Amino acid sequence: MKKINTGVIGTGFIGPAHIEALRRLGYIEVIALADINVGVAKEKAEQLYINKYYGDYRKLLEDNDIEVVHICTPNFLHYSMAKQALESGKHVICEKPLAVSLAQGENLVELVENINLTAAMHFNLRFYPLIQQARAMVEAGELGEIISVSGSYLQDWLFYRTDYNWRLEQDFSGSSRAVADIGSHWLDLIQYVTGLKIEEVCADFYTFYKTRKKPLKSVETYSGKILKSSDYKDIEINTEDYASVLLKFSNGAHGSMTVSQVAAGRKNRLAIEVYGTKKSIAWDCENPNQMWIGKRDSKNEFLLKDPSLLSESVRKYASYPGGHAEGFSDASKQLFNNVYKQILDSGKSKFDFPTFEDGYKELVLCETIAESARNKKWEKVRY
Picture 1 (tube, rainbow, N blue to C red):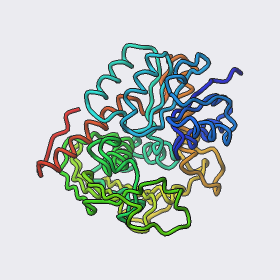
Picture 2: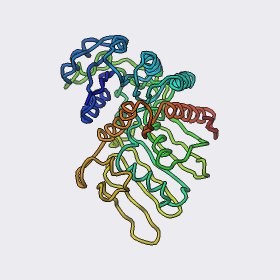
Picture 3: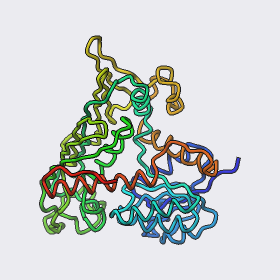
Picture 4: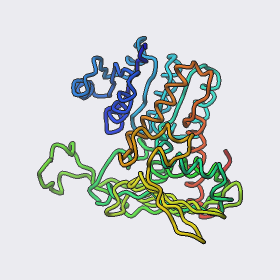
């Protein structure tokens, strides 16, 4: 079987994570890597055994051997890179957010509508086996009518004033941080599982560190050393460390979401709870191989990830037998498999994966949440 040739733009954490997941599928060959720093691109390419590397992503887009491009760069670059990749005739898989403005997102959606190319978002959390099972249970009516949802996405990687990353700067990340960066995953996931749209929001944002200390040199330079005050520059922070959002759904259900990047001890915990008129379910990504099922008149249950215990339509998303854990990289693998199957099928069939349209809807939702926080009132979401 002929392999599909792929190029990846971006060499931080998520770029190599994409590459690992792609290689596990077997029929995809990552043949090129690009980074704004050609030295970094060369080093990463050697580490990952990739033959081609570029210091200018446009050179990667000009490579006629490449059919699919993965965009794994800071947020402000997504729009221009995705647009140029599509115009170069490449299929695209993009990290969230799709863009940093509604106009940019709308432009990309319109572009995709007019060309015969596949364009996907990396909302990979949809593809944990038990998330697929939760969705199947809702669709089958096992939970009854959904009446409320709640949950959170909590991290601690920005817990200290000296913690710093490009996501803290609006020029790179956009006007929202915690909601757009991690809240977007939660918002996408809850709507995917329940099949409901969020129609109204009421948000509270807060920035605990009004200024942060930005290292004047690469953090790696100071590995194992204690930094002095002169090694930092004070930077004003205009994006939220924390947010809580009240939600109203299309069927009348209510809910709430809390996100924080300063929650000590919470490394990367997304949690959802869905309450229906028959049953409830709860799941979190730090324990992804079990799901709690709540009942009123009988014993509650824990469902463990085991293909033999899952709905028939869900079993294909569990690659290993019961007792063999599956996690973040497995979810990416399953998402990519669906995207590449559609590419192989030349778009004749529709496989389940988040599209640029989903990415645009998330932009609309996150912008409305930010607007609600500014105006301190309920706002309708106008998709």
